[in-house]
Amino acid sequence: MHNFPIFLLLVIAFAFLLTWIYNRNHGSIFMTMLAHASINTPQVVLIPLFPAVGVTSLNLAALIGYGIMALLLIALTRGRLGYKAGVTEAS
Image (cartoon, rainbow, N blue to C red; front, side, top):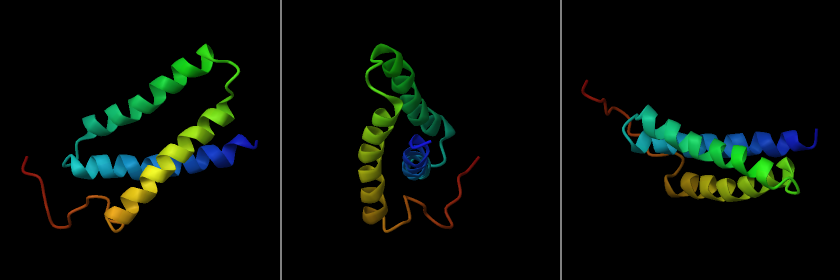
């Protein structure tokens, strides 16, 4: 159960990063999905390869890295995460 708060914070930090990627790529779902897959794939591969590294420590390391990036993005974009109000995409 002690892994859940770390995982929850990791998901929140990664949501900020995915939101920024989505906004900066003009609403590209493909780029957002590619970024999401780039997180899932190493976790699926690394956990079985290195059983001594627990899920909690892997999530904690990811939380530190993504948390710092998310905080920097929030600070540098002043909380807007690349969103431009009133800009619509032509179909």
